[in-house]
Length: 184
Ligand code: FE
Image (cartoon, rainbow, N blue to C red):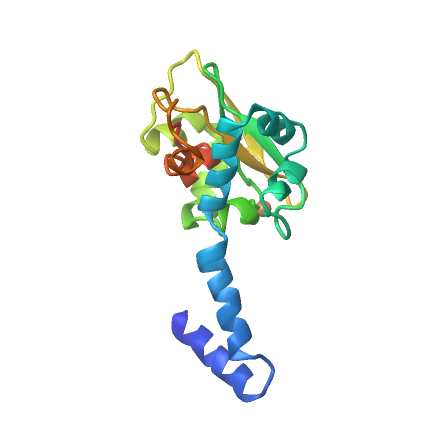
């Protein structure tokens, strides 16, 4: 696949159809500027700032845009909050819809048929496979992403983090915690 991409790219550059600098900029954008660290900043701010959290839960798209994360594949966002009695899991059963501005590109397993089917058939089993056994008293809610609406899980703020600032809090937030396959 890498060779085929390289061959196509060389041909297109040779024919003057694409500018290599533009390609580099696009790759750099997705490798360094878009990714789960954006979502982690959203979560850390929600943990630190109750007014922001309220805005985030009321209108996620607008609240997330306050931090500069917006655009394609994140035009309509919904943030779902984990509580001591509720856990949220995100999937796209149809294909691979995923909130790019806050989580970057989806991991390979997110796009796989086994994840897409098992997430709805046996969400507790899927989450256990990622290392978290949820007690029975925690209700699991599964959210099916679409091209129109994409989800971000707001994990619970871990105990013992009272003194931490937003940077330190963001470092605790994982991609899988924001998909819901793990519980922070
Ligand atoms: Fe999809």
